[in-house]
Image (cartoon, rainbow, N blue to C red; front, side):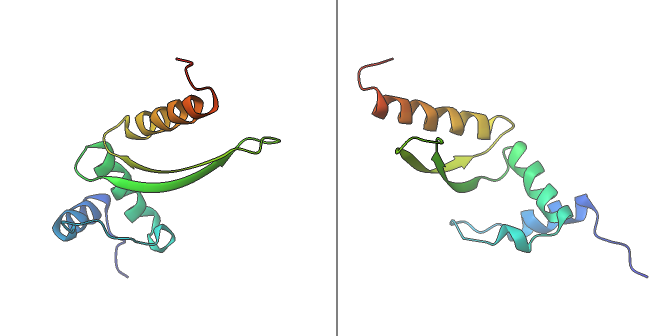
Length: 96
């Protein structure tokens, strides 16, 4: 019986195969361990993740679609804040 890959093995594998340009990949094709490795590498600022989101408030006609790039521990929060600020500026021009 073989041992499942460790988180360290997955991190090393990703670091050795990171392309120099953006590529698309299917996140559902990653194992739980591979997904965790990507999360840790992103949080450490060693790789960037790019995600496209479409947000809509219930009962409101405005939808916001954004592609965010995140890295570092606060990457998602920072990207989400920028999207929220941009959406608010579009809904309420001149409001800071």
